[in-house]
Image (cartoon, rainbow over all chains, first blue to last red; front, side, top):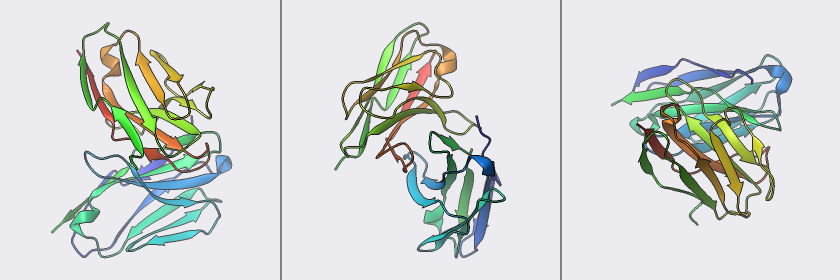
Length: 110
Length: 112
């Protein structure tokens, strides 16, 4: 069992603010790092899959970076909107199994 | 294209009752998974099936059994439900074990 940690656990920001949160993982068991967006009462939806150290992915106002050597990934949201409110999950893919963090719950206040 | 379909969406069981959660995917994915989601914990893997005809235990398999009926369907059975199995259950599928998941909408199970 591998420990994937996400911080902060929850976050409240004003509409228009930019924000970021962290996923930390044991760097020695790395195959890929996945980010998911999970809205209340729905199922998780894939955001990014990152495999290479220094990877940076972007989808609209959301972007993510990866540092496999030190074992962390950042997710950034620029100019947060109320529709960005969700839990953001990261998952470490070891090639054999996924290990999920507990998520960062983001609330964007209009 | 329905993706991953789980049934039922909600279920209440009495302790000791049995039930089967159904999962089907129409994306021709090879791998399928059952997870449970509990407050304050990340998604935990119960069982997975890397390919049709194979199943393996995940992190929390006790009290559950699975069947990979064919490439499309992967069911989860609780033989004798316990209150500790009260949870939200998610089925997921992927092209192969190292690719991203598509999740079902979840089954909220309460065991009283």
